[in-house]
Image (cartoon, rainbow, N blue to C red):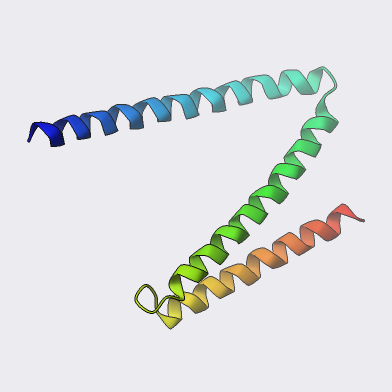
Length: 105
């Protein structure tokens, strides 16, 4: 029983520490962004935001493809789940394609 208690204590400490780090980084970002914009780095921040948006969509698309592959296995998924994932893939592809077209206008 002691082993389970030690494991749960370690996981709780990890969860609290990782949450604290995430909140600290978020706070630093919220604090520093207006200061960088005031110093003239607004265009760079906007370009970084656009890059982050494109990479997030591509990452989501790759994750959905991996999920589709897992649900294609006979024991792990149903046809309805695969169809739902396919609809999500099409939706993300449309968003990604429209974002790409917006870049070249």
